[in-house]
Image 1 (cartoon, rainbow, N blue to C red):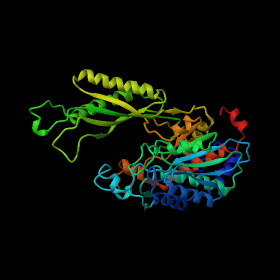
Image 2 (cartoon, helix red, strand yellow):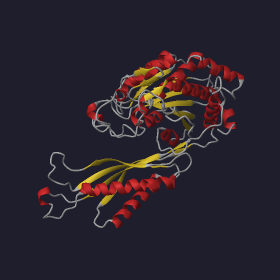
Image 3 (tube, rainbow, N blue to C red):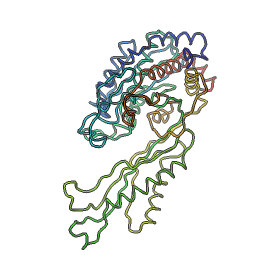
Image 4 (spheres, one colour):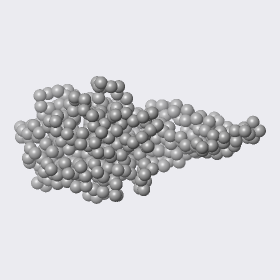
Length: 445
């Protein structure tokens, strides 16, 4: 890393970025992240956290507001206003957690019990902070807050507006059982934010991965129904027998192999779209004596920016048709129940070039592209609405006094990594919202 991460900026912008960076501290980052972790925000219930974020931004000189989607779910956003001659930039992060942090909803699917890191309560281990969502998404949201706060306190003269936006419903989930609205996840908050006029010329979304990503997968979900015969254990040997649950196992095993072939066919750019069978439903748990007439599987199939949801649907349906042909008597059908296209921002876009320059200045080397990605974020919502967007974030914590599995990767953040990402966001913001629109249009915006 270079001394200040500002190589390539002219003297004025270097000075402004340095002034802003002086307001970053480990203590302030720790305060911000613990404040976010300690307020539960499962998808559909982000309202209290949105209020906390808006209040925090307001206290440091931002115009800030809470934007309710309903009586429980809300976005938050803040704005530092420029003089109107430059482009507007959005620094964006979602704020909902993938799991809930309560045994009644998470156990046993998350494991036999809720560990410390799976609960909405922050614990500090020197440089590390753990707690539900401490890294993804809350550590990234805290970096956006710190960057905007630092730029505000430094009094950087802005030409365009700098918007900090925090979206509800960013996780890949439909409504939890306690909700009334079905569309609480899948970018619902980001879509609403844009529909209500919080719009900019460019955006940077803060999500995991220490690289500048310009493309990412979308996703389609299928409900797969496998048929069988409803019958009784005592009559298995006397009546026709075709167990839908056993048949569903055959379908799941076939799809798991097909997903690998699918991913190989569609790997391109930085994406390697994957697929999984995520859940199974069938039968009466109270009545083990009988088999169900149907069993359903849920499938998440990721799609590259190069294919449409309809093309993915047809490939998936063809795969099931091939399985039926090879398995006489198999009753399997599917319906596409969700579709979000993958998206791409041109690499020559200003925001990609500026964010890449910031990465290279911080690392002191050529930008490293990380391939093989299959994670989807609200960047697809932003790009899909026409806002050139790049994604940049922190790497997963690798060294810790505990094993880092999937959940701990989501729930553990390093303050040093937060400082580095915050410096990146500050440099990219200063490089963008202190220029004129004509200047960026002339630079191939």
